[in-house]
Image (tube, rainbow, N blue to C red; front, side, top):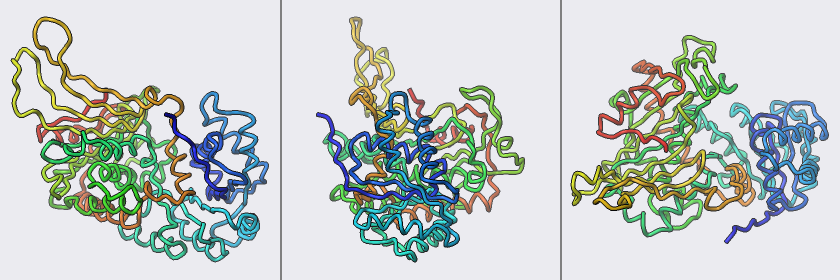
Length: 491
């Protein structure tokens, strides 16, 4: 049975940073795909806003070029592109002054009864200024939402201050803190696997699970983000949001319903149950790495310092952490987290490693019995593999093999797999907060991350070098192998 696309009511999406990289690569293509799928009702509008001095027609030219570059073969349909471009408008606006705000107010006056969503695809340093001017110009009503991209602060104090600033203009239920990882089909399928199947949930605890691995590996380097990345590093950029959100979905208790508040209440409990990592144990439980010159699929690549142009930077491009959750379900089960740039391959996956059988009835000649694994692949090639032991077919005695029950999204469902932003952009319009972070979630994550940052600073814990195109520093291997375990190798 195929899924049915349900149209949403007409809306206005105002994208601050409308000429930026995120709008070009993700937001405009995502909204175009939602149009093709029949989800946009008339007279929906998309309004780009930035400091650049452009006309509506010039912005449409920009959008057309963005679609031609970032859509896959066959997706650029002339009639649909023309219809999409007709939705586009542009306002030249300055967040720091009154310039352009009267023009935006006039444009939006034509859609007072529509859902109105402001997407801040800009630096967090001007979130506050934009929110204040949206409010002072009377652009907020009961149907208004605001979408903010990470990072939400650099630490707990700045996150708290930023949340306060946004909260002065918008109610919490109007604020959508976006993490695109939560929009991935496989991430949402994690909840379906756990809570819609009698097979897994009874085993989802310390009695049956040995450990959990969460890996988000990138094969690319800085990609033009040098300034931001060197101020942030992998812990702030990836662990505080993406990896901790994935950990929460793996570890949370069953919510009372799929309602947004019920789900987010359970995720918050996980964050608050994380065993603290600080000066006393950070050296043992964390690894920092920084890539050196090496090779990628494109050939030889520079190291981080060469790309950055600063030989003194100690910013980490790789992090591995052994985390533990101090509650009854997960007591004694380590969660190994790792993320890095310039890794051997681009892969994001969650690996649930079950405990081995307590006793083998088979002879030594049957072969090694490997513990069951559930591998949830987020990217690329989204899918789920359940690794089990079976008998190798044929005569000649009992020979055991470790094989996967493999469910590929592409093979099982066919067609196009929508991008995460497509779902999240529409969830904003539907006012569905389930896949967005609540303020207390964000601040609880920083509450756990801050002591790690402080421990690194206090101890001058240096980054261990690793060669670009490898699986990270040797200390990360030692982190898991001293517990008698090993990192999962993607297959």
